[in-house]
Length: 264
Ligand code: PEP
Ligand code: MN
Image (cartoon, rainbow, N blue to C red; front, side, top):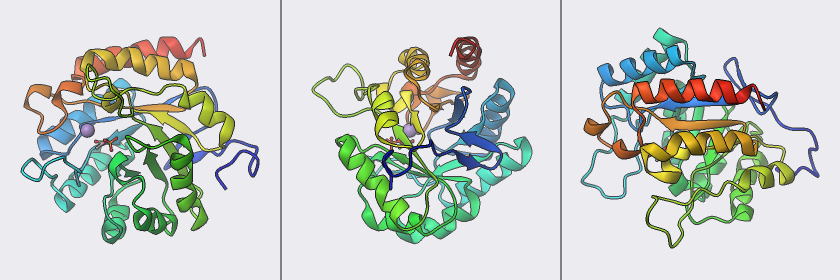
């Protein structure tokens, strides 16, 4: 179902009034790694909206490596995201980690994210296949393209065809960057599948200074959008501070992307 052979024309995924997968204009998803407080998410939401972002991201359920770190505000975080949407009009993207919370997250989110660590959580994928909201499926950090597309297939097979793929870097021998951005998946996925493909240069690099150049490279490679982490005070972030852009940094990136988009 995910293959171009089955569906030659590109799929356009609609998230509220934002179309992903058509035209030349790439979509920008921006926001903090995690929703931390009302002040933090509202401040970020206003700033990214003003700078021209299309969707607001923020984790309420966080898949952290260890159990003693901030795990997210859970439903309270979802409520804060809804408040930010109400104020800015930005549709919201947030992660869902388990099949039993799909209903809850779907009540609030406009686009449900499956994190890299859950790419092969098949019960979660099946549950997401049964809802009627779009899904952003991130590539597992050690998943092949075949496994990535097979994971998307699980969602489509249950009847939900509104799936966006997202490359977020893979594990390699290299430790100078958090992950290795596999940019070639963009043209490759576009050859193999009709589903839109986005890039997350924040998790792919783990380093703030590398995010703008990789975001630009993503668009040149043909990505339908980018997902970037932005925090009003990255030094105080409860997760992923080192890779989060500051608000001025995000504004500068948006300006560069606008100029670049004119050439695409
Ligand atoms: C995230 O988007 O905050 C996240 C946890 O990403 P990933 O699943 O790609 O690590
Ligand atoms: Mn993060």
